[in-house]
Amino acid sequence: MPTPVDLHNHLLPGVDDGARDETEGLAGLRALHAAGVRSLVTTPHVDASVLARPQTLDARLGELDLAWQRLGRVAVTVPEVELLRGAEIMLDLPVLNVDDARVRLAGGPYVLVEFPQPNVPPNTPAALHRIREGGAIPVVAHPERYEDVKREPRFARQWRDAGAYLQLNGGSLLGWYGKQARAAALALLREGAVDYVASDYHSRGQCPLAEYIEVLTALGGEEYASLLVAENPGRVIRGEPLLGVFPLPVRPALWRRVLALLR
Ligand SMILES: [Fe+2]
Image (cartoon, rainbow, N blue to C red; front, side, top):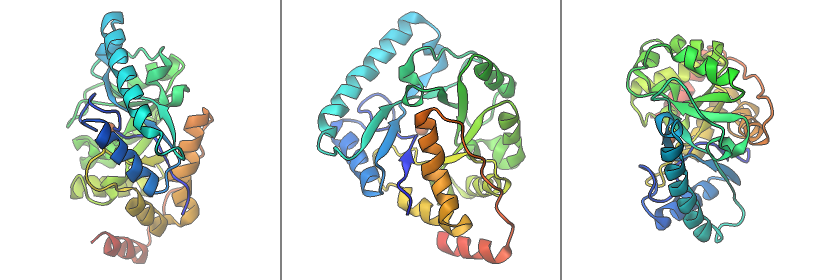
């Protein structure tokens, strides 16, 4: 099994719907460690509208700094895992200020973004294009969870055409967000439209990582799984270009095997 790098999780205590305190943050870290993770970027929720004004930006980043210190104090008991900072930015405005390195993935050029759910607002490709023009590289989190993408997975193609990458939630492959999200996730993988897969682990309950790596391996082999959970996420951390991911062959026997694994 590859050594996974996780670029989407909510381990910081008390700042969003993830870990409620240090105990849960540490439990989340330990669960990712147990699944083989040795490097991760933690991505608390931040709104683009908060980043747009100096006052709210300073206040939110101040909160996140304190939570980061709290997690750091308990994380010393898991020294094998490299902890890095990032954010999951809600594009509630079509403009994005990511000048501060603390809201970029590992402080590099990549930024994790999401849209208000469940339906995608208009003109999202233009917003992503503007982010790219501004010098940052947007990664759209869990495209398979939007109603528009569930209805028509090719809807997500316009985001890639606008210069964004796509990050799948591994739990979608396990049916955690329903059958439609799982079907959309598989359709995106089949098209080669997914650039990497992350846990979006909220520091509670079962950690999906080992299980979805097994599914990815069944779908495309070990090298394929490794590209999606280790190689490309590692490239994000290093600020390097991502490798292309090949479309999956449509082989009924393969899909039957994968579906059997998921049942
Ligand atoms: Fe998230």
